[in-house]
Length: 203
Image (cartoon, rainbow, N blue to C red; front, side, top):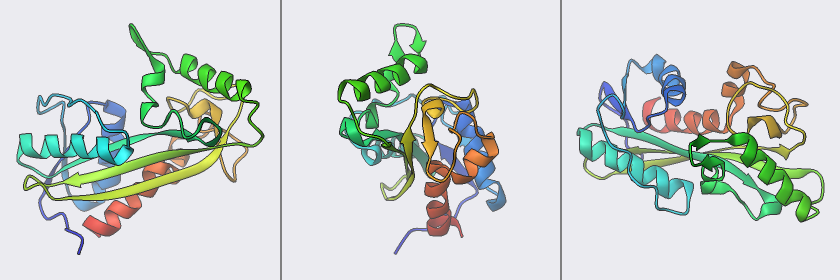
């Protein structure tokens, strides 16, 4: 039996302002006060797992124990079939430089590796999001969302973030980078995971 959320305050285990806004908007109908981990001064735990669920669990349990409140964390990234699922949990790491993240560099690496492998078209990929809701007593619930599509080149669009300019979702002729932000948020991997979270813990 899935555990329901029964409080009025929820910690979101992120220091990312954009992610906070997105999650706050999704939870607005449920009269929940959403507090970011950054606002509570919580540290960011090391993400040492090799799966999205594993890393989301680390973040959610860390925030729940530190705050004494239920906590929600997500881990997300892009998996590319012809690259054996890479970059996967290392999606952000591929963009790391000595001074911040460079996603143009990361997207260029993706395409270069696909070319080096002579990957067939369409170059199928998935954006994946795993949400973990954890309670201070150690209980958790896990929800996985996915958006299927393909990697395209050259990069297109300046909306969104990360790898959005090279990801064209199935059923569309535009990339996430060209798509209106609210349209993307409606169909995205995170929206898919959130629908499952709401049905399981809030509805």
